[in-house]
Image 1 (spheres, chains in turn blue, red, yellow, cyan):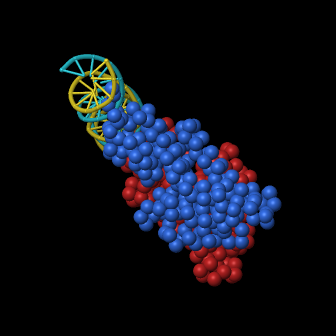
Image 2 (image 1 turned 180 degrees about the vertical axis):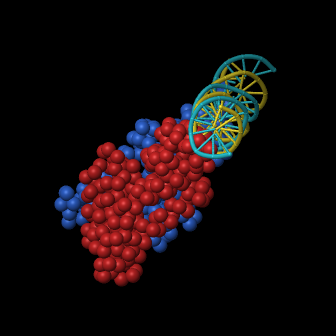
Image 3 (image 1 turned 60 degrees about the vertical axis):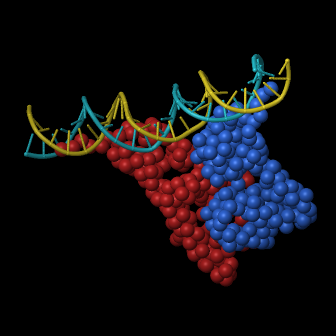
Length: 187
Length: 187
DNA sequence: CATTAAACTAAGCGTTTGCTTAGAAATAAT
DNA sequence: ATTATTTCTAAGCAAACGCTTAGTTTAATG
């Protein structure tokens, strides 16, 4: 009996994600989402409940996208070299024209206060923990570090990739490549 | 003839800075500034023209505050060790209770789009360039790196301190100390 | 003490925010 | 074709935003 939706939910979320990625959460208004997603506010709220719902779906879509490079890291068994590849893959992943959009997760962590939106914050923290676990797992592969070193270097690498997520929005490609090289030198 | 201001402009800017530092630029409303600064909106606009004016003054005050640790770096001549001290000093500087507020400059760069507010963006980029210059200058002191290495390591260190500015808002003290240790190991 | 210029209070300006809703259009089933 | 159910359009809601302004209070001057 009913009328069919005239839009594909995954397609419109893909567009919403791009907007959140470029602009951040708060700076993305529902009016902007309307335009970018190509559907009316009513449809947005009918499909995703509210703005937070659109963002959480966007975040989900983002995770699936970035899984292309995290799974490559997960399936690698070349230790530190695999992590270095992940750094370079991330740069490529976040690229848009000459500069980068950073990481949607990191961008949002930076924007929201811990008290703001616990649902979103939880999503973000667990994402970071997951990346750290992958780092630990690859560091173990090299069989040349004790457990303490592994934990320390995992913290270090997480800090560097966070930095890269910020740097990539401001600095040029050569500087970023330099940074990656030095990051893994003598590790 | 006129009546005297019932507030000290530096004092109220100090309070405004704290608010911007904790909350970011957009998330800090003029109503919140009113409360925190303890003066009416009229007085805010009379003294600082607009919200951007309050922020720029806050940024100025921030720079003066952080000069306490940047000048220590500037006056140091112990090469890489001086930079490492700066990293630790920064952690102390941005501390508030158990966690850190990051760096006001970095926080704002992360928040604003390049097209948003060119005046503020310019202030922020030149701040980062200044820090990088100090890194370069200290790296030269050690007399063990060629010019290419110095440029590369400066990019690297800038990335690490940016990362630290983000990490410090999320991770615990021990992780941050680990990160600093590994950052300077074998450099 | 009256004058005068600045600092104050408080109300409200126009916009934009996230979100809702009344009514029209569309479509699968009867 | 009629009915039922959902999607759509478009208008509008209250609240919050940055900012302004009319009117009162204050205090150094003549």
